[in-house]
Length: 370
Image (cartoon, rainbow, N blue to C red; front, side):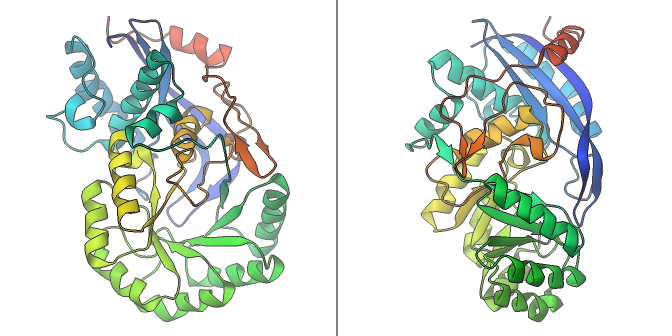
């Protein structure tokens, strides 16, 4: 496969309502879209998922876009054909910049799937000897809010067909909200996302969430503290799920060795693309680590890739991959699978296309491969 066009378009998309975590509050989602066209005439669009503030990751939207333009694109321009779809093969001499790499690697997989006459999910499944689920249960991630707001949001989510709810918390004061939510929704599948808001000394307070029948707590301690997470996991009667910690398959090996968690939130953008995601998925399943697909407040462009990965049967737990309309009013693409009968219906969806407005904006951008 040879690329004939590559165009880059920064966009700012307003959110329906502010989305707050322990890291930051989002009102506007800054993204960078990457349009690719192959010599066979197939098209795909990627999305740079980095944020503008360094709370979640040191890889930021501006710096990753610069790396993409100055380091990644020139390598593709110089290559006569696209090599094997791994970051190591595509950019062997570029360290880091996982989100920038994923912004190109993911749509390259889409081009490869189109050339093979497969859906993206089918290509991913074949790569690991798995099967595809045409419809999947999905969860929803709700930002930090007061109890009344959370109860209203959860009622809407349950009615809409979400199978489980993740509540983001910013500290110990929010644990009472989690417990009150359990009283109001006794059968709800419920997880908590700490986003690094806690310390090991909070172990006893976190253990009280067992009374609220919390399935897991995501990333309670700071990223990189695999030993601290192992100590905390040993003291908790429910699972720890790691997110910010997991950047590569080597990080998962460290989790297995230390016992740092029982679950992993897998985000293809955070780990550099699908190739690394599939390595992580295989290793996690080999060691009985629950693995599920997380969200990055993606537009419909980026959510297509997360939802396609979540279709693999190896994923047993609902991911944060519901319709992008949760966050945005104006879609950037035609990819809008419906949530019906408590399942996201993905089996009969055509390949996503940009909306006419976005397609016109892209055509005004310079072809960086010309």
